[in-house]
Image 1 (cartoon, rainbow, N blue to C red):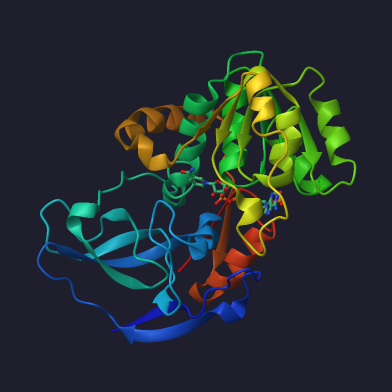
Image 2: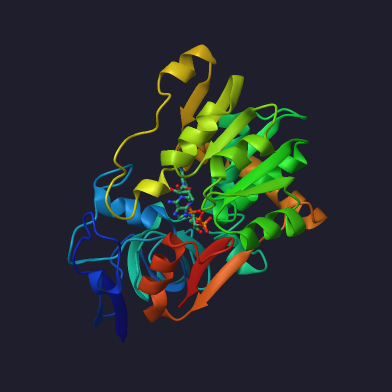
Length: 331
Ligand SMILES: NC(=O)c1ccc[n+]([C@@H]2O[C@H](COP(=O)([O-])OP(=O)(O)OC[C@H]3O[C@@H](n4cnc5c(N)ncnc54)[C@H](OP(=O)(O)O)[C@@H]3O)[C@@H](O)[C@H]2O)c1
């Protein structure tokens, strides 16, 4: 009747996240009260945002030292005190890095019975839905246009580029290293890939988008944002999804240059978004995503790390670019 938990023992501040910021605690398995559900964690989603939550309040409250590390999971109902959930049902839960947790039933929705179930955390979960709404709603890509996406080999970026191809765009992915670039072009069908770690990155980016960028899907902010901003066409759109270059370690010395000047002169539209903004339109997105996966137009790449105790190193590895596609830990 035990429950293993991984605790964020101390906030990293401006340090890089390291294993010593975490600790393992063994507690008692909780019992659900009225209106509550006991959940067993099957897979824990690893997200760049896990690190951003350590920096202060965002769309959720800031993490504090000593608390169970926060994170989303694919969990199974073990005991239910609500009518709409039964033992065995799968839900997406926000109970953090622990083997068991209790959540109010009102916050849980039964997930469809899809195989493999890991797709509920990847292409049919936060990553796929973020890519879908961020690109199509904020980016508004049109056939023949040039779309650039950063963190392109990650969970959101790899889906963004493929959806842009499905929509008839020319797609350039920005990722770290030649090997990831080859994977994007050879396996996922991107037109070109540019390595942001190459000292010639800016020149190579300009060469990859000779006529400029219509849509930039920004996962990273910082210098890559700046390089793309200078390559935008008039009336281009930038979908601001995240700023992961600023999540881990000391903040960059300066913000991107060209703001606001280029936004004015090139009449750009920048739109920030959070996935929850589109909650009422999930079914529409899932219908399209499922059809594209079934037809083979959308390839799903998952990076499953085995073992609950490996959560801290798996998150640190994601921040260092170890993953291709959606990283999660099998508990
Ligand atoms: N707005 C929303 O609702 C929403 C929802 C979900 C996610 N997001 C955002 O989506 C972005 C991607 O997150 P994710 O969880 O899907 O992670 P991910 O893309 O699967 O993994 C992160 C990747 O970022 C790359 N990276 C790390 N540091 C970088 C840097 N300094 N510059 C450029 N690339 C770097 C690494 O690959 P390389 O080898 O290429 O470096 C790494 O694999 C994040 O900004 C996140 O906050 C937003």
